[in-house]
Length: 111
Image (cartoon, rainbow, N blue to C red; front, side, top):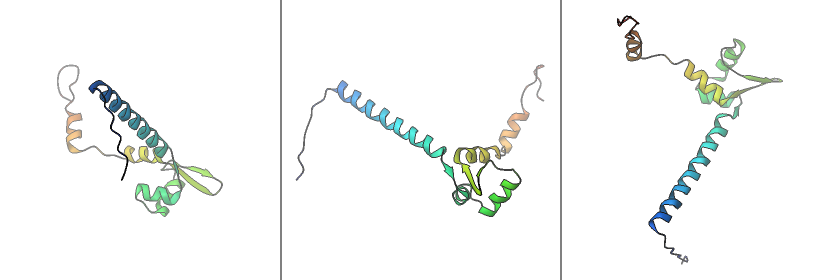
């Protein structure tokens, strides 16, 4: 049977302890995310990440369509660069296009 230890806290002490624990957990999580996004991926890992065949990635690197790092005969990809590359290819929805078209000019008229 485990030894149970019961400690009494005031409400203020408990809130302070809880806030400290939560903020510490958030800091650890954000540090881990930064490490993961700046990670270098090899060709196979990058292909899985962007959901493309490795041969397609080789083609993109030869056309300089995708950001990459080459050391010797090896290709590497920064995960954060791949995320930006994917986002850069995003197309606006019809709703977003319509909203952009409805911007007022200086005279108060719609373009």
